[in-house]
Length: 122
Image (tube, rainbow, N blue to C red; front, side):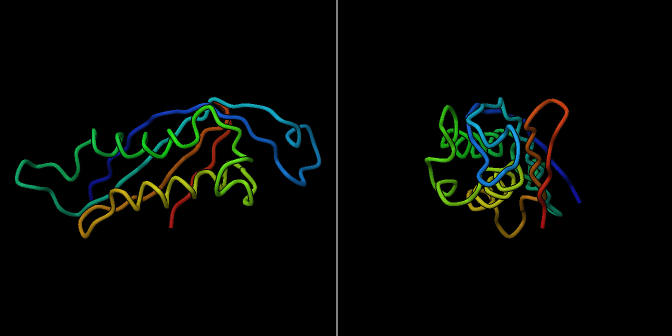
């Protein structure tokens, strides 16, 4: 099994609904995003998927959230914009762009701060 990982970031603000603390108020983060992709197969060049393609598609998803108030955009206008929900959002959205019979998103880690992260996988 080959596992490839890219790292990128975006900045946005959110407020957590029904949270009993400071995070219920509007605040921002410089989010870190790690996407891990796995494959059992390499192409004729010896590549599972080009790192550039993983990063490009992850940035497509990140651009939707970059410099936004997450609570006002889909799906976070309904779904609480927690790090957990953001990680699953990236997993699903990047997966819809790059998954195929040979390559699949394995896990996504979202860094809310340099010392706090959540990882989502299936």
